[in-house]
Image (cartoon, helix red, strand yellow):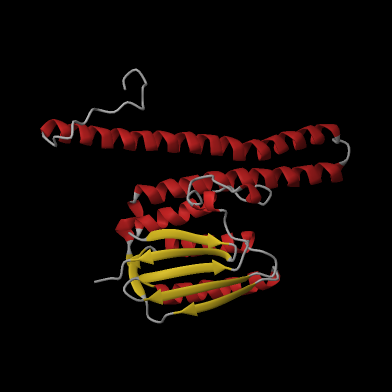
Length: 258
């Protein structure tokens, strides 16, 4: 391991004595280190990939400003375009910082009682006209008086990211369903009616910077669903996705308060 042979593991004899227990503990630690290293590589590659295009566009606009110095209208157009590209860069950095803050768990100390029914209802009402403007339909079905302890701002961010994802990636004239259920657990659902997520991609949709091939031509940085999972984890909830040719179904399962 010290020589960089990160795939090596301590031997386990199967006798389950103290040496096996020590080896198993070391191997678990090494597996975790390997996962963290893979995450760092993925984030580094994702940041480089997503920053390359807007920064190259800024550089291009600066060259155009140099060329069009005598044309004030053209210069103003180039400056506005450059500002938009820099805004993309800042959004990426802000998303990364927010993701790191959530994963650090510091926000847990500020948990309060949250009226989840009201929070979901308010956000559903706010997004309904947004979906209508996109020629899509959002239906809302909310169980009443659902409360849990959490961070209301982050829970709002979680749901907004799920709705934005459905808005961006569902088909034309799609029907999107937002539901809040209270059974043995509390469950939040965002489901659309197509085109779904390819099976090989379903296990990776919550990974940082992951974007399916079909999504590469649409705006985004592949961090929205990562933030959804991080916020769910912070609230001891489980974020899952199921998908087939009939659409994608995102589910957040919260533990019911004692």
